[in-house]
Image 1: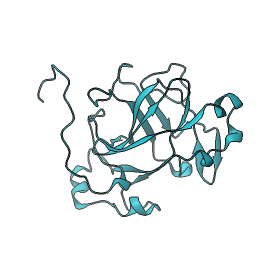
Image 2 (image 1 turned 180 degrees about the vertical axis):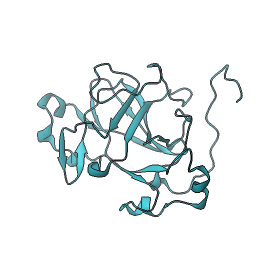
Image 3 (image 1 turned 60 degrees about the horizontal axis):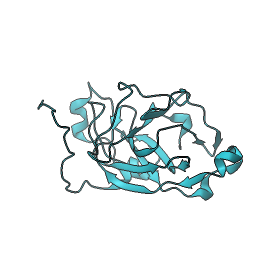
Amino acid sequence: MKGRKTFPGWLDFMQISTETGLTTRTDNGELRTINARAIKDAAAVYDESKPLVTRDDSGLFLIPVKPGRWVVGGANGTALTLGSYAFNVPVGAVTYLGKVIVGNEDGSSQVPEIRARAESPETSLIKRSALMFTTIVFSYPKLSDVPHDALLASASDRLIAAEIEKNVRFNNYLGGVINRAADLGPMPHADPVSRVKGDSDR
């Protein structure tokens, strides 16, 4: 994860159902921290998380999660429900996701893709509920990017690159501000996310 020195909160990952595309929250909605013992269906890297190693202002993190389908859920309280990245975590594998750069869309980011999405006039309308939108730039995983010397031999031997699916949409699990990964470009048309049977209109 790039930009550790100015990381603005947390980056969270959610497990999603392969049948409905909805995030699962069997842990009563609590994002588990990187140092938690229990393996749940939600995970987070936050500003106090300790990376295995840091190089060139990037941190490498190892997070225990349930096998299954996952999505890069959001960052700093913004859910990337309008477009993010999904990946599968096989049983017994150490799955390398790739590089994630987190930034605020307020014109201060040094990342061109995020800086180009600087605050719009509409953002000022929700200033009271959200100070700024947060988004990500994603780099597809290459095992050559992983500092293998930072991993135990048992983990390095099971290391695989995640198969990434881009432009995945899901429900607003945060119930708050929604956004889209900066490097996905404009949002194309897509069918709405499935609803869970029994959900009531709000």
